[in-house]
Length: 236
Image 1 (tube, rainbow, N blue to C red):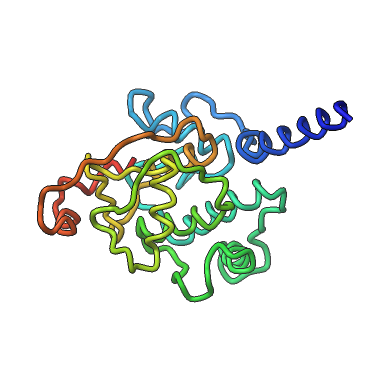
Image 2: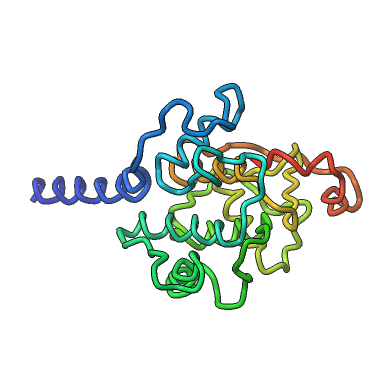
């Protein structure tokens, strides 16, 4: 009986390890100079390398990553789809025989509950931070985002917003913690490719997640912080 319990425990631990760490493995090698616009001295260099090696993000053009460029809606949906497919052992969609390169990714996202049809307009326009957060939060099961932070509100995210629950889930799990000590998120702003790479790293590797206690903003209307350009960069 004890042996059966021990074997069962090992099986459970193996499943947990696969889901929370081993489920995301390197699929390609990142060599020096893979992206000529990502110098080793930049804070995001290791994040870009990781996102590339995991197969979640590629360059914009050949050896250019464009770290300061915006993530497009099509790219955001593609990233979320890849996360879901890899975690669940499914085949990634192909872009063959479709009107646009991202049509099958959009179809996959809808069919697998990552997004609802019509909730986001697919295309090459910039995706908002709220939209990206919603896609990532829906790409993995709730228990993958184990809470490590006690966050009840985000200063510039209305709790009645459709994306509020998704953003709170990521804050509690330490996947994102805002751009200042108050946790300002700027939900309607675009997200940089370098910032997205950093978020992907925290999604794939829970040990990279941020443990942080947010300060209470003394301003009467914290929502106005979203309009201050001091808080429009480095969403990490």
